[in-house]
Length: 247
Image 1 (cartoon, rainbow, N blue to C red):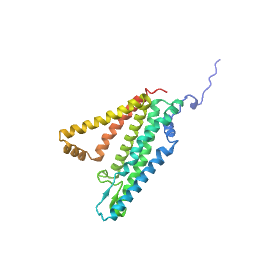
Image 2: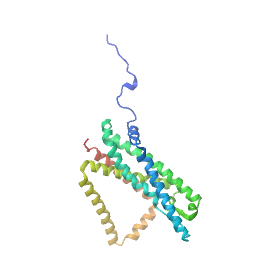
Image 3: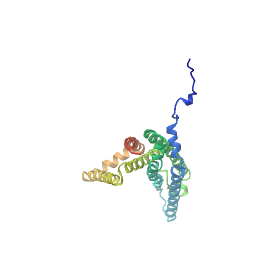
Image 4: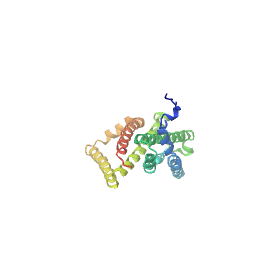
């Protein structure tokens, strides 16, 4: 006679259900990278810009002053993406996480951080509108072209650009680990040359007016949608590359 022993439900599977969220928690173990340093960079850029606006206003300039210094944390997110690979990839493999779970969890962690940064960006824009540019007609976050579709549109633009920079840094770090410094440097040079070739083609064909008109017609949200598509392509490329990365 055979006795059947019923195992508890949690013992029937060896994998937890929140492995992707586990990668998110792994990335946020170092909150300094994803939260505090971006906020510090944004605060520093904001403070320096206000001082510059005050100096200009003190010189008798009455017109509105716009600054793109709020984009400063965006460039740092490329470093965040690189650190997400360099600091946690091999540790995640030691925890038996799959490459897909590592990529999805890392991208989700970046999205959470980008939502927070976008919210700060929008709140700053509201403050600048309410105070007429801090009382001196100086604007850091409220850029009319970005805010054409209101606060949600502005937040979406900032969110997408943050994600794009993160994924680029993420992918470049994977390329470095997979192929080494020579291939990474060659790839960056090739990208720069391709951009210069495009600019040269536009210049030779005297097509700059058409290019600027197309950018204006697309508006900030339209360009952000294109950037979101590029982010998806680069994210797929990151996953395909990390699959070939040896541990």
